[in-house]
Image (cartoon, rainbow, N blue to C red; front, side, top):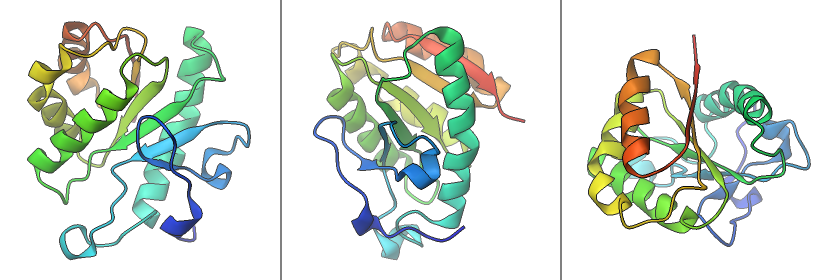
Length: 171
């Protein structure tokens, strides 16, 4: 896979992130955005759509499309992938996740956390729970494609925020 330059992607009006090129989504009519795209080479290593990040996206999206169809969530909804970057601190990931969810409050967008570190996803979400109770997330489902060991904890936290939660194991 070739690395795609950050300048080729577009930023959405609401929710933050960069539009993922259709070459990665494999659905030209889809609206998929990536929040927390690595952009600080001094602290995070490679920037932009690195090969590893492209692989995470291409592994998660087919299952995401399957879950959306299976649960009847509507294939025209906007999808936001949140990259929990293990090369950044928990605090930075938590702040960026909160920023994303604040932007998604009162929308019908879908968010999907992706990472090589599923514990980073879990802890970043747990870190921002107190702030999430003030947001309107009842129509912003979380689709978690990952480790079954995190399923119960993530569902419990999503329930605390009145956020719909859907899961598919990634083996």
